[in-house]
Length: 127
Image (cartoon, rainbow, N blue to C red):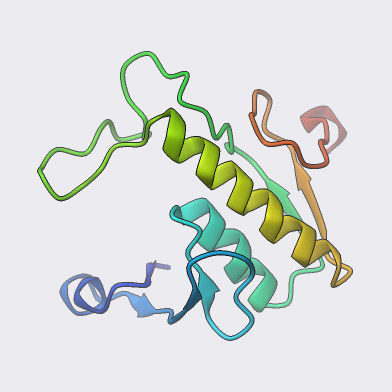
């Protein structure tokens, strides 16, 4: 399933369009962007009615040796690659969103082996 918050990407790549509700916090009608796709994915899981959300691959740090995305760094003037300041901002927004989700009786657990997020942790071996 391909989902996007960008109307042009919806048209160009035949994606499901998901409206945005806010730039931070927890979107209750559409997603809050949080500045990154992980934030949006967790918000979407909440909107779809998940009662438990498990995070895998949410390292959320700028301690990478050569690139910031699994596909490598963005190339081009209008696409920004993450830096320490962006990751710090994303972590803060993400942790604020998780607190809002948990206040609505939805469990969020981070199973990422190495992570900079300070939310509830779980061990992959326990899954």
